[in-house]
Length: 211
Image (tube, rainbow, N blue to C red; front, side, top):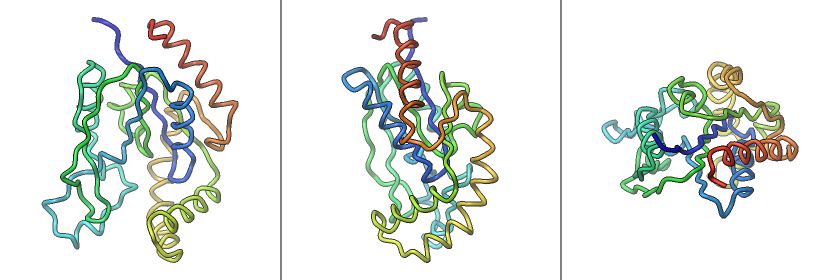
């Protein structure tokens, strides 16, 4: 068996800054063989359901994700095989017809709110991070993002946060913190944690003769 890619999992609640951490690590290795894979692309296909049913989708629940497909794709990438990544269309609450061809890389950063919840996914990771940010910051970030990028009203964002996002975070996301090798407080603003992470990845890559 030859060498296989390094998989870094980056988990954390909505608005925690996990995307900033992922991008910071990615940028540190720009020019090397590295890729990002987001769990958000792997929401289940719901084209068989009427739109009224799709509108009820709870995107913060583990059952919303097609982890079987994500694991299948991750295992392919670990064998240095290309994948056809699905694309999710939030306007119709199901997968779009579009797919994205993804070539394998030496480093895979897997990012998502619930990537540490499934033990099959955890078993494929070399390093597991959990980005831990206070709830007040997470709601403010989500509020700003959803109003600015998704055209939603403040009332609808707050209603969804209180009714769905917060309880799902407490029930499913926060408990996965115990599986993390490293907990990163305050997300992308924590340069010390990111620099330590980059150094650790460099060591692993050197051991595998990737650098």
